Length: 500
Ligand code: GLU
Image 1 (cartoon, rainbow, N blue to C red):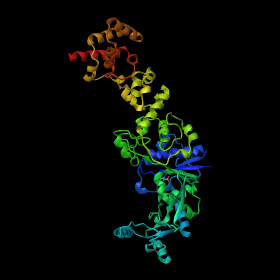
Image 2: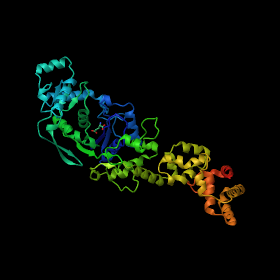
Image 3: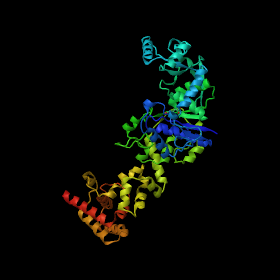
Image 4: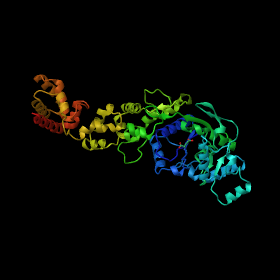
Protein backbone atom coordinates (compact mmCIF):
# COMPACT_ATOMS: atom_id res chain seq x y z
CA UNK A 1 0.00 0.00 0.00
CA UNK A 2 1.48 3.33 -1.08
CA UNK A 3 1.18 6.04 1.55
CA UNK A 4 1.52 9.79 1.07
CA UNK A 5 1.22 12.68 3.44
CA UNK A 6 0.66 16.40 3.44
CA UNK A 7 2.42 17.90 6.44
CA UNK A 8 1.72 21.62 6.83
CA UNK A 9 2.83 23.71 9.79
CA UNK A 10 0.25 25.98 11.41
CA UNK A 11 2.52 28.98 11.02
CA UNK A 12 0.08 30.96 8.89
CA UNK A 13 -2.68 30.52 6.31
CA UNK A 14 -2.41 27.78 3.71
CA UNK A 15 -1.32 29.46 0.49
CA UNK A 16 -1.52 28.32 -3.07
CA UNK A 17 1.88 26.57 -2.90
CA UNK A 18 0.67 24.42 -0.01
CA UNK A 19 -2.56 23.66 -1.82
CA UNK A 20 -0.63 22.55 -4.88
CA UNK A 21 1.55 20.25 -2.70
CA UNK A 22 -1.57 18.78 -1.08
CA UNK A 23 -3.16 18.27 -4.49
CA UNK A 24 -0.15 16.52 -6.02
CA UNK A 25 0.09 14.25 -2.97
CA UNK A 26 -3.57 13.44 -3.35
CA UNK A 27 -3.36 12.76 -7.09
CA UNK A 28 -0.23 10.63 -6.73
CA UNK A 29 -1.81 8.62 -3.89
CA UNK A 30 -5.14 8.06 -5.61
CA UNK A 31 -3.48 7.17 -8.90
CA UNK A 32 -1.74 4.35 -7.01
CA UNK A 33 -4.82 3.41 -5.02
CA UNK A 34 -2.87 4.50 -1.97
CA UNK A 35 -3.68 6.53 1.10
CA UNK A 36 -3.00 10.16 1.84
CA UNK A 37 -2.73 11.47 5.35
CA UNK A 38 -2.76 14.90 6.91
CA UNK A 39 -0.17 15.58 9.58
CA UNK A 40 0.03 18.87 11.42
CA UNK A 41 3.64 19.79 12.13
CA UNK A 42 3.23 22.11 15.09
CA UNK A 43 6.52 21.75 16.91
CA UNK A 44 7.63 25.35 16.43
CA UNK A 45 5.73 27.20 19.15
CA UNK A 46 7.36 30.54 18.30
CA UNK A 47 5.95 30.51 14.80
CA UNK A 48 2.51 29.21 15.72
CA UNK A 49 -0.28 31.39 14.33
CA UNK A 50 -3.72 31.19 15.92
CA UNK A 51 -6.40 30.00 13.50
CA UNK A 52 -4.04 28.65 10.89
CA UNK A 53 -4.79 24.96 11.49
CA UNK A 54 -8.46 25.71 10.98
CA UNK A 55 -7.66 27.65 7.82
CA UNK A 56 -5.56 24.76 6.49
CA UNK A 57 -8.28 22.19 7.14
CA UNK A 58 -11.11 24.30 5.74
CA UNK A 59 -9.16 25.26 2.61
CA UNK A 60 -8.46 21.61 1.83
CA UNK A 61 -12.07 20.68 2.49
CA UNK A 62 -13.28 23.40 0.12
CA UNK A 63 -11.03 21.99 -2.62
CA UNK A 64 -12.41 18.48 -1.96
CA UNK A 65 -9.01 17.11 -1.03
CA UNK A 66 -10.08 14.51 1.48
CA UNK A 67 -7.64 12.62 3.65
CA UNK A 68 -7.74 9.00 4.72
CA UNK A 69 -6.11 9.73 8.07
CA UNK A 70 -5.55 12.92 10.01
CA UNK A 71 -6.11 14.88 13.23
CA UNK A 72 -9.89 14.86 13.14
CA UNK A 73 -10.27 11.71 11.08
CA UNK A 74 -8.07 9.43 13.15
CA UNK A 75 -6.23 6.37 11.87
CA UNK A 76 -3.95 3.71 13.24
CA UNK A 77 -0.73 5.72 12.98
CA UNK A 78 -1.92 8.70 15.04
CA UNK A 79 -1.88 11.04 16.80
CA UNK A 80 -1.49 13.17 13.67
CA UNK A 81 -0.55 16.39 15.42
CA UNK A 82 3.14 16.47 16.32
CA UNK A 83 2.59 18.32 19.59
CA UNK A 84 0.78 15.18 20.77
CA UNK A 85 3.73 12.92 19.95
CA UNK A 86 6.48 14.42 22.14
CA UNK A 87 7.10 11.29 24.23
CA UNK A 88 7.58 9.28 21.13
CA UNK A 89 10.35 11.56 19.83
CA UNK A 90 12.11 11.33 23.20
CA UNK A 91 12.17 7.58 22.98
CA UNK A 92 13.66 7.67 19.49
CA UNK A 93 16.31 10.27 20.22
CA UNK A 94 17.49 8.29 23.23
CA UNK A 95 18.07 5.39 20.90
CA UNK A 96 20.30 7.56 18.71
CA UNK A 97 22.27 8.78 21.71
CA UNK A 98 22.78 5.26 22.96
CA UNK A 99 24.07 4.21 19.57
CA UNK A 100 26.43 7.17 19.30
CA UNK A 101 24.56 8.83 16.43
CA UNK A 102 23.45 11.88 18.40
CA UNK A 103 24.93 13.82 21.31
CA UNK A 104 24.10 16.38 24.01
CA UNK A 105 25.32 19.92 23.51
CA UNK A 106 25.45 22.38 26.43
CA UNK A 107 26.68 25.51 24.68
CA UNK A 108 24.76 28.54 25.83
CA UNK A 109 23.44 31.18 23.48
CA UNK A 110 26.28 33.49 24.50
CA UNK A 111 28.81 30.74 23.77
CA UNK A 112 27.43 30.35 20.29
CA UNK A 113 27.24 34.10 19.67
CA UNK A 114 30.90 34.35 20.67
CA UNK A 115 31.88 31.54 18.35
CA UNK A 116 29.97 33.17 15.54
CA UNK A 117 31.71 36.48 16.11
CA UNK A 118 35.13 34.86 16.17
CA UNK A 119 34.45 33.22 12.82
CA UNK A 120 33.11 36.45 11.35
CA UNK A 121 36.29 38.26 12.36
CA UNK A 122 38.19 35.65 10.39
CA UNK A 123 35.87 36.25 7.45
CA UNK A 124 34.16 32.88 7.67
CA UNK A 125 30.82 31.56 8.83
CA UNK A 126 30.28 29.56 11.99
CA UNK A 127 28.50 26.26 11.97
CA UNK A 128 28.47 23.45 14.51
CA UNK A 129 30.01 20.42 12.86
CA UNK A 130 32.72 17.88 12.52
CA UNK A 131 35.52 20.48 12.19
CA UNK A 132 34.87 22.15 15.57
CA UNK A 133 32.54 20.02 17.69
CA UNK A 134 35.39 18.72 19.86
CA UNK A 135 36.27 22.23 20.96
CA UNK A 136 32.68 23.05 21.94
CA UNK A 137 30.66 22.03 25.05
CA UNK A 138 29.07 18.70 24.34
CA UNK A 139 29.01 15.07 25.33
CA UNK A 140 31.74 14.31 22.80
CA UNK A 141 34.21 16.83 24.20
CA UNK A 142 33.39 16.62 27.94
CA UNK A 143 34.01 13.68 30.25
CA UNK A 144 31.23 11.24 30.93
CA UNK A 145 30.93 12.22 34.60
CA UNK A 146 30.76 15.92 33.70
CA UNK A 147 28.00 15.20 31.21
CA UNK A 148 25.94 13.16 33.68
CA UNK A 149 26.35 15.93 36.25
CA UNK A 150 25.15 18.56 33.83
CA UNK A 151 22.13 16.47 32.93
CA UNK A 152 21.40 15.65 36.57
CA UNK A 153 21.50 19.35 37.40
CA UNK A 154 19.14 20.08 34.52
CA UNK A 155 21.56 22.36 32.75
CA UNK A 156 19.82 23.40 29.52
CA UNK A 157 20.97 21.45 26.53
CA UNK A 158 20.02 20.40 23.04
CA UNK A 159 20.53 17.10 21.25
CA UNK A 160 22.42 17.23 17.97
CA UNK A 161 22.82 14.76 15.14
CA UNK A 162 26.36 13.45 14.83
CA UNK A 163 27.17 13.84 11.19
CA UNK A 164 29.54 11.18 10.00
CA UNK A 165 32.72 12.14 8.21
CA UNK A 166 31.75 10.48 4.92
CA UNK A 167 32.32 13.01 2.20
CA UNK A 168 29.32 12.27 0.06
CA UNK A 169 25.68 11.85 0.89
CA UNK A 170 23.85 10.30 -1.99
CA UNK A 171 20.20 11.34 -2.04
CA UNK A 172 17.50 10.60 -4.51
CA UNK A 173 14.60 12.58 -5.88
CA UNK A 174 12.00 11.23 -8.30
CA UNK A 175 12.34 14.31 -10.52
CA UNK A 176 16.04 14.98 -10.27
CA UNK A 177 17.50 11.50 -9.88
CA UNK A 178 20.62 11.13 -7.72
CA UNK A 179 21.86 14.21 -5.92
CA UNK A 180 25.19 14.31 -4.08
CA UNK A 181 25.70 16.49 -1.04
CA UNK A 182 29.00 17.16 0.68
CA UNK A 183 28.72 16.20 4.36
CA UNK A 184 31.69 18.29 5.45
CA UNK A 185 29.69 21.48 5.03
CA UNK A 186 26.69 20.21 6.96
CA UNK A 187 25.85 21.32 10.45
CA UNK A 188 25.26 18.82 13.26
CA UNK A 189 21.58 19.72 13.21
CA UNK A 190 19.64 20.08 16.43
CA UNK A 191 17.17 17.23 16.81
CA UNK A 192 15.69 18.16 20.19
CA UNK A 193 15.62 21.75 21.41
CA UNK A 194 16.39 22.84 24.98
CA UNK A 195 12.67 22.79 25.84
CA UNK A 196 12.52 19.10 24.94
CA UNK A 197 10.56 19.73 21.74
CA UNK A 198 11.88 18.17 18.52
CA UNK A 199 12.91 20.24 15.54
CA UNK A 200 11.09 19.97 12.23
CA UNK A 201 13.81 17.71 10.78
CA UNK A 202 13.69 15.14 13.54
CA UNK A 203 9.94 14.94 14.03
CA UNK A 204 9.39 14.89 10.27
CA UNK A 205 11.68 11.92 9.66
CA UNK A 206 10.51 9.94 12.69
CA UNK A 207 6.88 10.47 11.69
CA UNK A 208 7.37 9.67 8.02
CA UNK A 209 8.96 6.42 9.12
CA UNK A 210 6.41 5.53 11.81
CA UNK A 211 3.48 6.50 9.61
CA UNK A 212 4.92 4.30 6.85
CA UNK A 213 5.07 7.00 4.26
CA UNK A 214 6.29 5.56 0.97
CA UNK A 215 6.69 8.83 -0.96
CA UNK A 216 7.22 12.34 0.34
CA UNK A 217 5.87 15.00 -2.01
CA UNK A 218 6.77 18.52 -0.92
CA UNK A 219 7.97 21.88 -2.16
CA UNK A 220 11.41 22.48 -3.60
CA UNK A 221 12.30 24.71 -0.66
CA UNK A 222 12.84 21.50 1.33
CA UNK A 223 15.40 20.07 -1.09
CA UNK A 224 18.27 21.55 0.93
CA UNK A 225 17.04 19.60 3.99
CA UNK A 226 17.19 16.33 2.09
CA UNK A 227 20.78 15.36 3.11
CA UNK A 228 19.97 15.93 6.79
CA UNK A 229 16.88 13.79 6.44
CA UNK A 230 18.85 11.06 4.69
CA UNK A 231 21.41 11.18 7.51
CA UNK A 232 18.69 10.80 10.14
CA UNK A 233 17.28 7.78 8.29
CA UNK A 234 20.79 6.41 8.10
CA UNK A 235 21.40 6.98 11.83
CA UNK A 236 18.32 4.88 12.59
CA UNK A 237 19.19 2.37 9.92
CA UNK A 238 15.83 3.00 8.29
CA UNK A 239 15.16 2.95 4.56
CA UNK A 240 14.19 6.45 3.41
CA UNK A 241 10.97 6.90 1.44
CA UNK A 242 10.95 8.22 -2.13
CA UNK A 243 11.14 11.98 -2.40
CA UNK A 244 9.56 14.30 -4.92
CA UNK A 245 10.28 18.01 -4.59
CA UNK A 246 7.83 20.12 -6.56
CA UNK A 247 9.04 23.18 -8.50
CA UNK A 248 8.59 26.61 -6.99
CA UNK A 249 5.59 28.77 -7.79
CA UNK A 250 7.02 32.09 -8.90
CA UNK A 251 5.43 35.52 -8.81
CA UNK A 252 3.89 36.80 -12.09
CA UNK A 253 7.14 38.49 -13.09
CA UNK A 254 8.98 35.19 -12.64
CA UNK A 255 11.31 36.76 -10.10
CA UNK A 256 11.19 34.99 -6.76
CA UNK A 257 8.68 32.87 -4.94
CA UNK A 258 5.04 33.91 -5.02
CA UNK A 259 4.20 35.66 -1.76
CA UNK A 260 1.14 37.07 -0.02
CA UNK A 261 2.55 40.51 -0.76
CA UNK A 262 2.41 39.78 -4.52
CA UNK A 263 -1.28 39.03 -4.08
CA UNK A 264 -1.87 42.33 -2.29
CA UNK A 265 0.19 44.24 -4.83
CA UNK A 266 -1.37 42.81 -7.98
CA UNK A 267 -4.81 42.29 -6.47
CA UNK A 268 -5.24 38.54 -6.84
CA UNK A 269 -6.00 35.84 -4.27
CA UNK A 270 -3.17 33.62 -2.98
CA UNK A 271 -5.18 31.43 -0.59
CA UNK A 272 -7.94 28.87 -1.14
CA UNK A 273 -10.30 30.64 1.22
CA UNK A 274 -10.11 34.11 2.74
CA UNK A 275 -7.58 34.63 5.50
CA UNK A 276 -8.54 37.36 7.93
CA UNK A 277 -12.08 38.62 8.01
CA UNK A 278 -11.48 42.35 7.79
CA UNK A 279 -10.30 42.55 4.24
CA UNK A 280 -10.53 45.35 1.76
CA UNK A 281 -10.21 42.78 -1.02
CA UNK A 282 -10.72 39.02 -1.00
CA UNK A 283 -7.52 37.01 -0.75
CA UNK A 284 -9.18 33.59 -1.10
CA UNK A 285 -10.04 32.01 -4.45
CA UNK A 286 -13.37 30.88 -3.03
CA UNK A 287 -14.53 34.35 -2.07
CA UNK A 288 -13.06 35.87 -5.23
CA UNK A 289 -15.60 33.74 -7.10
CA UNK A 290 -13.85 30.54 -8.20
CA UNK A 291 -15.23 27.02 -8.27
CA UNK A 292 -13.05 24.50 -6.42
CA UNK A 293 -12.59 22.47 -9.60
CA UNK A 294 -11.37 25.56 -11.47
CA UNK A 295 -8.64 25.98 -8.90
CA UNK A 296 -7.82 22.26 -9.13
CA UNK A 297 -7.45 22.67 -12.91
CA UNK A 298 -5.25 25.70 -12.44
CA UNK A 299 -3.09 24.21 -9.65
CA UNK A 300 -2.42 21.11 -11.71
CA UNK A 301 -0.88 23.33 -14.38
CA UNK A 302 1.51 24.89 -11.92
CA UNK A 303 4.52 22.73 -12.58
CA UNK A 304 2.58 19.90 -14.19
CA UNK A 305 1.07 19.14 -17.56
CA UNK A 306 -1.09 16.08 -17.02
CA UNK A 307 -3.88 17.09 -19.38
CA UNK A 308 -4.25 19.65 -22.15
CA UNK A 309 -4.73 23.12 -20.79
CA UNK A 310 -7.51 24.12 -23.18
CA UNK A 311 -10.33 22.28 -21.48
CA UNK A 312 -11.70 21.83 -17.99
CA UNK A 313 -11.10 18.38 -16.55
CA UNK A 314 -12.61 16.58 -13.60
CA UNK A 315 -10.78 15.55 -10.46
CA UNK A 316 -10.86 11.94 -11.68
CA UNK A 317 -9.33 12.94 -15.01
CA UNK A 318 -6.36 14.36 -13.15
CA UNK A 319 -6.02 11.29 -10.94
CA UNK A 320 -5.93 9.08 -14.02
CA UNK A 321 -3.51 11.34 -15.85
CA UNK A 322 -1.12 11.98 -12.97
CA UNK A 323 2.39 11.13 -14.01
CA UNK A 324 5.65 12.11 -12.31
CA UNK A 325 7.26 12.38 -15.73
CA UNK A 326 4.92 15.22 -16.55
CA UNK A 327 6.08 17.37 -13.66
CA UNK A 328 8.58 20.05 -14.59
CA UNK A 329 11.75 20.86 -12.71
CA UNK A 330 11.69 24.57 -13.39
CA UNK A 331 9.55 27.01 -11.43
CA UNK A 332 6.24 28.09 -12.87
CA UNK A 333 4.90 31.61 -12.95
CA UNK A 334 1.62 32.39 -11.27
CA UNK A 335 -0.78 33.61 -13.95
CA UNK A 336 -4.04 34.95 -12.57
CA UNK A 337 -5.48 35.62 -16.02
CA UNK A 338 -5.10 31.94 -16.82
CA UNK A 339 -6.85 30.98 -13.57
CA UNK A 340 -9.73 33.32 -14.42
CA UNK A 341 -9.94 31.97 -17.95
CA UNK A 342 -10.34 28.46 -16.52
CA UNK A 343 -13.13 29.61 -14.24
CA UNK A 344 -14.96 31.39 -17.06
CA UNK A 345 -14.73 28.24 -19.15
CA UNK A 346 -16.11 26.28 -16.23
CA UNK A 347 -19.04 28.65 -15.78
CA UNK A 348 -19.86 28.40 -19.48
CA UNK A 349 -19.96 24.62 -19.21
CA UNK A 350 -22.30 24.28 -16.25
CA UNK A 351 -26.05 24.76 -16.23
CA UNK A 352 -27.84 27.65 -14.60
CA UNK A 353 -28.99 25.52 -11.68
CA UNK A 354 -25.39 24.64 -10.78
CA UNK A 355 -24.33 28.23 -11.27
CA UNK A 356 -27.00 29.33 -8.82
CA UNK A 357 -26.01 26.71 -6.29
CA UNK A 358 -22.42 28.02 -6.30
CA UNK A 359 -23.23 31.64 -5.96
CA UNK A 360 -24.42 32.93 -2.66
CA UNK A 361 -23.76 36.54 -3.42
CA UNK A 362 -25.81 39.37 -2.03
CA UNK A 363 -26.72 40.22 -5.61
CA UNK A 364 -28.29 36.81 -6.04
CA UNK A 365 -30.17 37.08 -2.77
CA UNK A 366 -31.56 40.49 -3.69
CA UNK A 367 -32.53 39.34 -7.18
CA UNK A 368 -34.31 36.33 -5.70
CA UNK A 369 -36.51 38.58 -3.63
CA UNK A 370 -37.12 41.09 -6.43
CA UNK A 371 -37.71 38.57 -9.24
CA UNK A 372 -38.64 35.30 -7.51
CA UNK A 373 -39.81 33.60 -10.71
CA UNK A 374 -37.19 34.95 -13.05
CA UNK A 375 -33.96 34.09 -11.29
CA UNK A 376 -33.08 31.29 -13.74
CA UNK A 377 -33.77 33.52 -16.75
CA UNK A 378 -31.64 36.27 -15.29
CA UNK A 379 -28.60 34.08 -14.73
CA UNK A 380 -29.07 32.39 -18.10
CA UNK A 381 -28.65 35.81 -19.68
CA UNK A 382 -25.34 36.55 -18.00
CA UNK A 383 -23.75 33.13 -17.54
CA UNK A 384 -21.55 33.44 -20.61
CA UNK A 385 -20.25 36.82 -19.56
CA UNK A 386 -19.25 35.73 -16.08
CA UNK A 387 -15.61 35.03 -15.35
CA UNK A 388 -16.02 34.81 -11.58
CA UNK A 389 -19.13 33.88 -9.60
CA UNK A 390 -18.86 37.28 -8.00
CA UNK A 391 -19.23 39.02 -11.38
CA UNK A 392 -23.02 38.99 -10.99
CA UNK A 393 -22.68 42.07 -8.85
CA UNK A 394 -21.29 44.26 -11.60
CA UNK A 395 -23.28 42.74 -14.45
CA UNK A 396 -26.67 42.61 -12.73
CA UNK A 397 -26.76 45.50 -10.30
CA UNK A 398 -28.92 47.46 -12.79
CA UNK A 399 -31.75 45.00 -12.09
CA UNK A 400 -31.65 45.91 -8.43
CA UNK A 401 -31.69 49.66 -8.65
CA UNK A 402 -32.48 52.03 -11.50
CA UNK A 403 -29.67 54.21 -12.89
CA UNK A 404 -28.89 57.06 -10.54
CA UNK A 405 -27.23 59.15 -13.20
CA UNK A 406 -26.77 59.18 -16.94
CA UNK A 407 -23.12 59.90 -17.80
CA UNK A 408 -23.12 62.76 -20.30
CA UNK A 409 -20.22 61.35 -22.31
CA UNK A 410 -22.29 58.27 -23.10
CA UNK A 411 -25.28 60.39 -23.98
CA UNK A 412 -23.11 62.40 -26.43
CA UNK A 413 -22.29 59.18 -28.29
CA UNK A 414 -25.89 58.16 -28.88
CA UNK A 415 -27.67 61.45 -29.44
CA UNK A 416 -31.08 60.75 -30.86
CA UNK A 417 -33.16 63.29 -32.70
CA UNK A 418 -36.48 64.12 -30.97
CA UNK A 419 -35.38 61.92 -28.11
CA UNK A 420 -38.12 62.99 -25.66
CA UNK A 421 -40.81 62.33 -28.23
CA UNK A 422 -39.41 58.94 -29.24
CA UNK A 423 -38.98 57.67 -25.70
CA UNK A 424 -42.52 58.85 -24.94
CA UNK A 425 -43.73 56.79 -27.88
CA UNK A 426 -41.90 53.78 -26.49
CA UNK A 427 -43.77 54.30 -23.22
CA UNK A 428 -47.07 54.47 -25.07
CA UNK A 429 -46.37 51.29 -26.98
CA UNK A 430 -45.26 49.31 -23.94
CA UNK A 431 -48.37 50.50 -22.15
CA UNK A 432 -50.63 49.34 -24.92
CA UNK A 433 -49.33 45.89 -25.93
CA UNK A 434 -48.44 42.76 -23.95
CA UNK A 435 -44.75 42.79 -23.08
CA UNK A 436 -44.15 39.79 -25.33
CA UNK A 437 -45.16 41.77 -28.43
CA UNK A 438 -43.37 44.97 -27.47
CA UNK A 439 -40.41 44.21 -29.71
CA UNK A 440 -42.56 43.72 -32.83
CA UNK A 441 -44.67 46.79 -32.16
CA UNK A 442 -41.60 48.89 -31.54
CA UNK A 443 -39.95 47.70 -34.75
CA UNK A 444 -43.07 48.52 -36.63
CA UNK A 445 -43.02 52.04 -35.18
CA UNK A 446 -39.32 52.50 -36.06
CA UNK A 447 -40.00 51.52 -39.65
CA UNK A 448 -43.05 53.71 -39.96
CA UNK A 449 -41.31 56.77 -38.59
CA UNK A 450 -38.04 56.02 -40.33
CA UNK A 451 -35.98 56.49 -37.15
CA UNK A 452 -32.31 55.51 -36.89
CA UNK A 453 -32.66 52.11 -35.29
CA UNK A 454 -29.18 51.93 -33.70
CA UNK A 455 -29.37 55.10 -31.68
CA UNK A 456 -32.97 54.48 -30.68
CA UNK A 457 -32.16 51.05 -29.26
CA UNK A 458 -29.05 52.40 -27.57
CA UNK A 459 -31.10 55.19 -26.02
CA UNK A 460 -33.64 52.73 -24.66
CA UNK A 461 -30.85 50.60 -23.22
CA UNK A 462 -29.15 53.67 -21.76
CA UNK A 463 -32.44 54.71 -20.17
CA UNK A 464 -32.91 51.29 -18.53
CA UNK A 465 -29.35 50.35 -17.60
CA UNK A 466 -27.46 53.64 -17.37
CA UNK A 467 -24.85 52.14 -19.66
CA UNK A 468 -24.48 50.73 -23.17
CA UNK A 469 -23.44 47.24 -22.09
CA UNK A 470 -25.45 44.33 -20.74
CA UNK A 471 -27.63 41.51 -22.01
CA UNK A 472 -30.05 41.75 -24.95
CA UNK A 473 -32.30 44.81 -24.64
CA UNK A 474 -35.59 42.93 -24.99
CA UNK A 475 -34.51 40.30 -22.48
CA UNK A 476 -33.83 43.12 -20.06
CA UNK A 477 -37.27 44.62 -20.78
CA UNK A 478 -38.89 41.24 -20.16
CA UNK A 479 -37.23 40.89 -16.80
CA UNK A 480 -37.78 44.45 -15.60
CA UNK A 481 -41.41 44.32 -16.72
CA UNK A 482 -43.72 47.11 -17.83
CA UNK A 483 -43.97 49.20 -14.70
CA UNK A 484 -40.27 49.38 -14.01
CA UNK A 485 -39.44 50.07 -17.68
CA UNK A 486 -41.92 52.94 -17.78
CA UNK A 487 -40.50 54.36 -14.56
CA UNK A 488 -36.95 54.28 -15.97
CA UNK A 489 -38.01 55.72 -19.34
CA UNK A 490 -39.69 58.59 -17.51
CA UNK A 491 -36.54 59.19 -15.45
CA UNK A 492 -34.62 59.38 -18.68
CA UNK A 493 -37.07 61.86 -20.14
CA UNK A 494 -36.51 64.05 -17.07
CA UNK A 495 -32.77 63.83 -17.69
CA UNK A 496 -33.23 64.77 -21.35
CA UNK A 497 -35.41 67.71 -20.42
CA UNK A 498 -32.81 68.87 -17.94
CA UNK A 499 -30.27 69.07 -20.78
CA UNK A 500 -32.11 71.61 -22.86
N1 GLU B 1 5.97 21.19 7.89
C1 GLU B 1 6.61 21.47 6.65
C2 GLU B 1 5.90 22.67 6.00
O1 GLU B 1 5.24 23.38 6.66
C3 GLU B 1 6.51 20.26 5.74
C4 GLU B 1 7.74 19.94 5.01
C5 GLU B 1 7.66 18.51 4.51
O2 GLU B 1 6.68 18.20 3.83
O3 GLU B 1 8.56 17.74 4.81
O4 GLU B 1 5.96 22.92 4.85
